[in-house]
Amino acid sequence: MKDIHLTLPAATAALLDRVARERDETRNGLIRLALERFLEAERKRRLSDDMKAYAVEMGKHSGEFVKETGSLVAKKLLKETSW
Image (cartoon, rainbow, N blue to C red; front, side, top):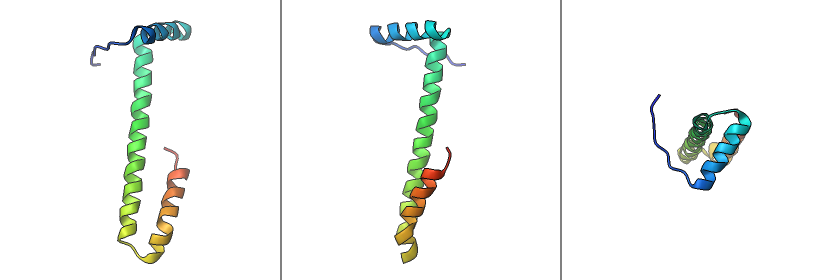
């Protein structure tokens, strides 16, 4: 693992300490978990954005049927896909 230094506002640090005690977890463990969850959500958001952009770009170069239905299909795929 890589060590990092983190400075927090006093109120945030106090809340972090309280939650860590309540969950019987270390501060580092809670921060690591929160950061991992954030980064995974960010990865999914970027993937979704890339897929949407691809669908839009493909719609520009496709026939009329794809232009009329492509974005509906893309929206349905994005909505129904489990990330």
